[in-house]
Length: 320
Image (tube, rainbow, N blue to C red):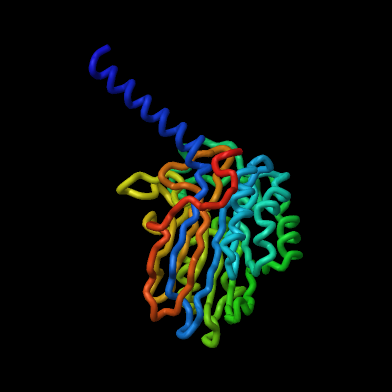
């Protein structure tokens, strides 16, 4: 075999190894990230918020269900779910098993496109197209109403196109949420207007972090917006980051914490799942994030980019 043939063989072997790792190992490498964000009113006590997103659950994903359920051991003050929980018409019981212990805690949620419609088989190369150029194809309708009813019955608040004022851990929180901007279902006019000043936290919630939505929250004085949808890029290259975000958000914000405008903070979860038709992650393990919110006068001690770690939970990691 000549030198060129050996190079091709080696390149092919490396590519096959990368695909095997991405599909068989990394997509079940459940990871907890932690970050501190200075977003609270002065003299507020710290608030622990667990951000989960993009479970894309199917009935047989037992490892994921056990791992998410074990997150209750973190004892969060508030749980925020930013959508895309389902990936199968029979996945509601599985999603509820995963979130079961967390549903005993204060929580809020909005839905994403893959709560409403199931995944479809498509050319994987389409994932690399800019969001506005990729033709959207809906799969079969999913039982999102059943999921909404179950979470609401357990006490979680549906924030879709609603403003709420709640008290968590002795702290007054104003929150507002949107239906999925990725499907252009968002109606910011239904929740628009300045957020109240006499609360400790003004929190916005959306599935897809579209800039038009973030601009509106920032203009109305929100302290923090939580979102998902991007999967952190799902495929990331060392030194380059996310290849795409699947929305209009720039690649540098595909996962983790950043600022938007002069004072608003943004946290984008890389999420816990993938489409069953694109079951790969590379340099972007599935994640949940424990956010410790602090008064604005304090500086963050970590970021979600540099504190990723495997959890100590006995949750059957990397086992289907």
